[in-house]
Length: 235
Image 1 (cartoon, rainbow, N blue to C red):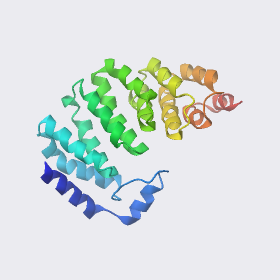
Image 2: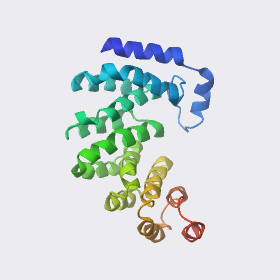
Image 3: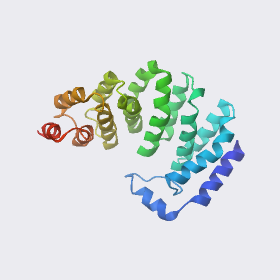
């Protein structure tokens, strides 16, 4: 295991680009830790090592992923998430506790959060839909990334028309959250839910628009026609 981790980090250092590092930082308000590698090359590295990872036992896979997440480097997190999203056949119901701990301890920007939630948690919920109640509880966390995760984890399903009741539950809890990353997270969720349930989402927005931060509101109505946007934005 240590050999794989050492080789991955060696490859990451070789592929690092200082120019891209500065460009990447512009996408974040907080300081992020990264090598400076674009997504295409990061995916190539993920795929390079995936054949070796995929034949390992689950305990070793999770151990390697934990080591990579704990470094706080964005690219190491992206590689771990890429592997895990492809190994959803290994998930058991109890894994949600591990996934939650990784979010709580190691997720520190929107890119890590969204990648993990859309790539891993969404597939976990496909397999264990009854556990959605546990994910919704994350919206009560003091950790803003856990709160964002509670919304973003439902995005993939909401895009397909699923989880409408849960979309409203999470949005109710996060409605007046003062963190912009959380506001954008549940606003994005409402936007994706509007693809299949526009009327219900629009009614929800009209009911709550005076309490919703403008950031959330703008995200939520993004896919709606001009007339609905005008009505929604009117105070």
